[in-house]
Length: 384
Image (cartoon, rainbow, N blue to C red; front, side, top):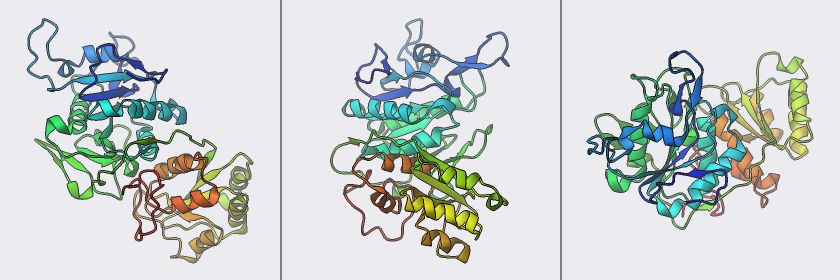
């Protein structure tokens, strides 16, 4: 079904309905020792996952009709199942290519993914899949249904599949990369993981949820991105030589900031500032930042707070960053800012000036910009 060599397609694929991109994670895990539920978790392959998820099959193992069948075909491509802490740019490219190369065959796509780096992958896909007009829903679980009677996995999976198949579910098309978890559909590049154990693991601090799932699934059409005209375009070049720096009291008295910013391999940096964008007004902080920007490093300021926005023009302690050439990230999340840097810096058509210009624009719904009149049609994710 796909030319992606690292993806193993299920031989039963029909080329209709929803395509699942299976990457592993907790949702596909079971205890290593079946007799010891506390033994380390290991990930099963897709064949085993599907065998133990009866809602994906029209008939039960004895051949009788499955009254709990989801109601449409679900195909799968299995990438190497891994813990999500091991997922990075190369893996994002594989996921994006599976979607791009199977784009015309399916109503939508579900990516089963571990929770730890899910927001990074969702953000990456939002920038890599320009012109996306179909749902791409990431989901996972805090407790797998394969090894736990009480779990969040099965409902997360089934709801994500229904959102990804609007032709069958009757739901509005959600033409963007999203995360479904617990009872909420969130814009992928607006999401953050907020707890390591609770079922409501993700929040969208600066943007409303796209849909709510209770007895029924209710999509809020007002906050969806418009369906773009034209076809899908894949951006598959990613620049990994970026860094995030979180400011803390005492950073001005250490050499850490200068050590990071003076690395000749560094192409971009996310500055996780205090509050609305302040950093120490100390030459030992401001000088290395200015020197890095002059050298061609692209720097973007975001807030290390759980919500709110950066306003670099608001305080004297933040105006210095503007004077040094730092881009304001407005209300973008630190995760989306980092991934946006990676994708833009990987574009061979962009120099640092072009990257800075696009960082200051909303190109995939990732940030709130007051003035959008100067948006360029060549920006990834731009709609007509």
